Length: 169
Image (cartoon, rainbow, N blue to C red; front, side, top):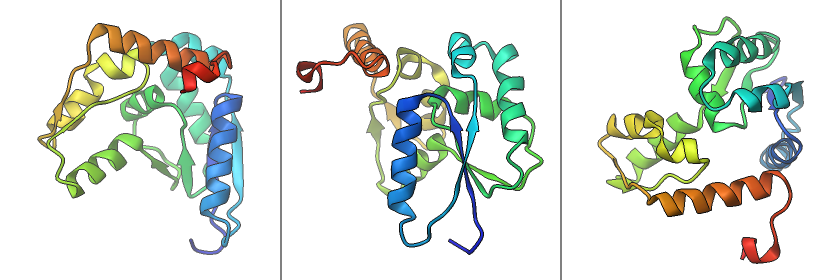
């Protein structure tokens, strides 16, 4: 990284913020890249997930508009990337690290032909990933309703810090 670069991290919850801060620190240990935390009202955002774009779009746009001094923006929420895709082009020079685009690039390099997506129930069942994968001729392997419910229940336990060692195993 060039000297003077700054990474913006949208703070959307304690666990995800802590995780991303630790990963950024690990990856930039030699460069000591400063991180600008952009506090977002995740309680407000969460109640409008997954698809209340009327509320999500202006909230996300407002947060992103305050990050013009940063080179890279990290949005640690998959569904907010779907919201991001709906926004007009950003005026700041910041580049958003987009997990869908990054994943598609890696899948193309690996010459993958089919994949399974794990995430929230919405992420696993919406057309968002299926459409993106179709664009690079990768087949999305559908999951049964039972598996979607199991994965989503585990995700919610992790979010609320109620996962047990048995759940983790």
